[in-house]
Length: 341
Image (cartoon, rainbow, N blue to C red; front, side):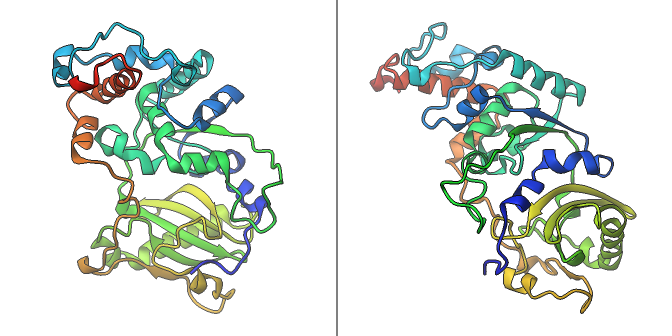
């Protein structure tokens, strides 16, 4: 089911992290928002071959030549690509700002744009993680993500007051958050309608977590209290969705806000059910998987690649994938004979 309530452009803009973070800084993870310049936006929007910026070069050639002997004879010192489509871009000032934030946050960050994170691209990430410790990891995730591409090209397509002719000014940002190890079993999605918390659901529906049944009442009480004390009457929308994590009793942390509508996953609810919730007529509904047989398929299972590429991306040398992609570029531009591949 899709939501019967029409989503508005203004609601999507209010759920942009740079818009809400200043108001809720004390109840969420430490975050820095870096404005994306026009040249960086153009690079992220480009289709076609994946070529990382020049700033990534010194990070990428750590693999030894003998590790790639199966790919044929390759001149590793030769520049790859002569056409404009393969030209390496460079954003030294912006990349330096990114590196400073990574360093200030202890060397590990979580990244996203205004609305979406590149979680659909973790197949290309090292150890299948969203954790970034270098420019190469960051740019690779951003360039490989359909979710990021959606943010940059059509964030308002589900809004009833938007059309293709409308030009909505969006100040795009790269959002870097201090990396915190979060147990997926402590993450919850919450739906707020007309200022009331109407539903709560476990965020990771692909796994069964036995502790949820034992702690259901306590979890609900903590999230309801957090909403009443920290969110209600402070977030500007009447209808919205928020994600939180509850790492322990009496501790809830805000993760994100999402618009109430089809672009937000309704998880174990249907949008029809959620739209029918009435103010004050019933208790906040809590849903979670109650037995191991009730797990749902992983929502990003179709964003997958062959096993050998997964092994390459998560091998002992984390930069081997970078070298492989550059070798692939050389192959496609004719610098490596096709019969040697």
